[in-house]
Image (tube, rainbow, N blue to C red; front, side):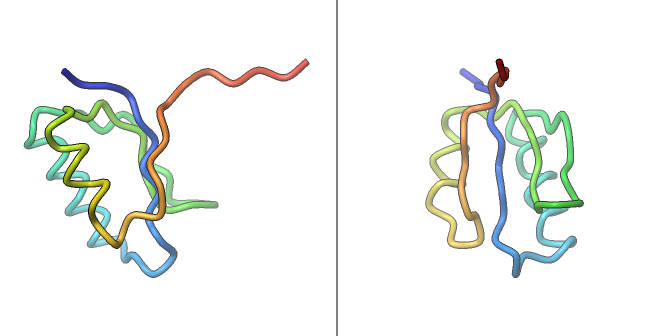
Amino acid sequence: MSQRYIVVFKNTATKDQIDNYEAKVNSSGGEVTRRFDTGMNGFAAMIPDSFLTKLQADSIIDFIEPDSIVTTQ
């Protein structure tokens, strides 16, 4: 099953490295839905559970959070 996540890479990650991870998500049955190149390095994606485990163990990843709607009052 795939869930929606925000994946943020460490500041040391290059554009080519992030491109590579984007391709891996897409080829593993997921889908990158938005790319973040300004302010933070990362993307929003539907990520299969089986691939999420691999991402979480990778040292180039700063953090992964579930994607959700945020509201302010």
